[in-house]
Image 1 (cartoon, chains in turn blue, brown):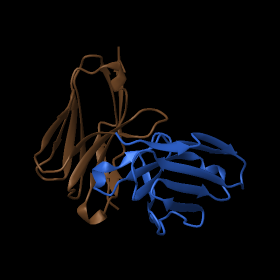
Image 2 (image 1 turned 90 degrees about the vertical axis):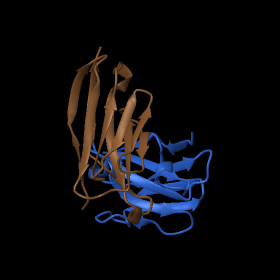
Image 3 (image 1 turned 180 degrees about the vertical axis):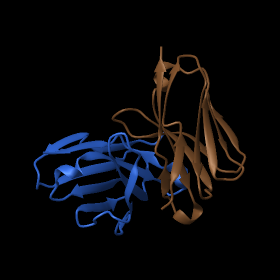
Length: 116
Length: 112
């Protein structure tokens, strides 16, 4: 099956710093990538949808200036949490779609962000 | 906004028992998806359902797309310890492009 990787798997940072998380599709071209956030014991909440070469579409309530998304190539999307604060601590998960339908959405292993 | 409800919220069962969980919505979906998430991992797709009334199996797992298109259930037969995890249903509407809506999840614990 299709493989999606995320890097780093865990990151701890100080409040006020920025953190970049990478999402890569390893064996297929991802025309669309999705970024989710998951708090403990809660479901996945979609943050934004990104298409290669165009601006990301953010869900209501998600600050686009705080969560910068770049989908520069068909195999890489990045999420940058700018000026991170403790309330941004969460599990961030990306998924990638080959564009052939929603059932082709493959998830990465997630990145655990802890902001001190 | 759109919401999915899942029941039960959590369940504790003996190894070997069958499991049943379901997902409901106040609105119609065109596709129902069932995912399993292990601790600290991303979700993995178990079963996808595309038509009302569709019944699909994947090994010991069976899922059905409700006739009203507002619900779906997932059954696991003869549970084993590795079935432990969080099971999420997710719905998709054709008008939502590739976006899916996730339910709150059902936590499954299997007692050996």
